[in-house]
Amino acid sequence: MRKIRFITIFLVVALMTMLPALSSAQKKAEAPARLSCSAYNVGSGAYPMLAYFGDAWLEKYGIKLRVIPAGTDMARLIPLRSKEVDFTATGVAAYFAQEGLEEYATRDWGPQEFRFMWLAQHPGFPMAVRATSDIHKLSDLRGKKVPFIPGAASVNIAVTLFLRAGGLTWDDVVRVEVPSYGAAAKAVLSGTVDTCAYNVTGGDMYELEASPYGIRYLSPPAEDKEAWKTIKSVIPFYAPSRSTMGAGVSKEKPADTMTYPYPLFLGYAEQLSDDMAYFITKATHEAYPVVSEKDPSGAMKLCWPMEANLKLFESGACWPFHDGSVRYLKEKGLWKDEYEKINQAAIERQKKLKKIWNATIAKADALKISDKDFNAFWLKERAAALGE
Image 1 (cartoon, rainbow, N blue to C red):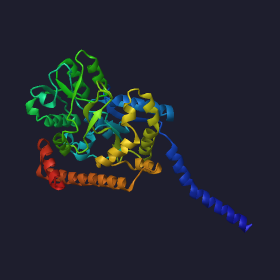
Image 2 (cartoon, rainbow, N blue to C red):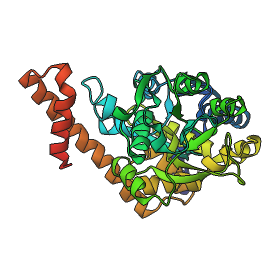
Image 3 (cartoon, rainbow, N blue to C red):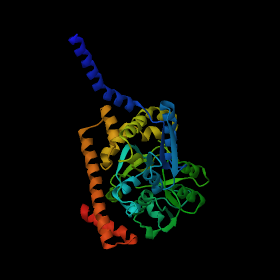
């Protein structure tokens, strides 16, 4: 009798011990009913990519993906910060926001503590001009009308670096303000501006290619070491590329372009749960074969493989993966000790920037620094604290 009672107690204890693990496994397998994200506008190269994933996730997991398009970098981050969306699909502006630079060097923003779930590879980002124009190289942009997009630091800095690669500055061109990324491409078509920096697979580029004007791209080739040294001194993860897909390009007619992580799936460290980040990484990985087959352009196949994701993470060395994403990568046997070092270093930098930011805010308040002067004050304090 005592033996039976002992076995019963043992089984009860064993079952109670297993319940948390079983519950955790069940929870991990559960998919959210729906997801929402902010993304690039209709007409951009990224928007149809989100549509492909939305269809694949609905088909495979029964999840509805709600996409909120936005024309500028900041407009994509605002709904993320206000918790209107679960994550965002944005570009390298995330780097400026993470570092508290450009538009994010204000009292309202400062360094942001993001975590990433996926880094896709950009299919190609050059300056585009009409093929009928007299602009054949970057230096030919002297005196031409070049768009500037308020709130779009990543695009504006890319244009700045393209100009610099051509031996030019904004003082050498006619700066024309346009309201959004898509509006810049439309302005080339209408003749309001002479060029724009744009994704070669963007719908607006196909529209320009099909117009009577045609399309031509400008970007320093990989052999121009001096130009790329200049570009990488500002944005270390920008890299030369030869685009073989997109408007006006093919394997037979490739174009020199620039590549970098785009789009990036990211959320806030304190807002996005480990399970949600785990699922987004898992769903992106598992949907890759489906979206690759469904996309006739080949862009999904080029931009979204796991290999590109991990290569961009390793080479950029500035994007910390979310703990939930790391959990998935470990389960798949893809997480290396070197990745852990990179991830922890990126997280530590975010913590350091936050500490500098808090000290700067306190100092600025004590000195009664105005909002107008705060940007310069923060950048000076930041540089001094980082030794940059």
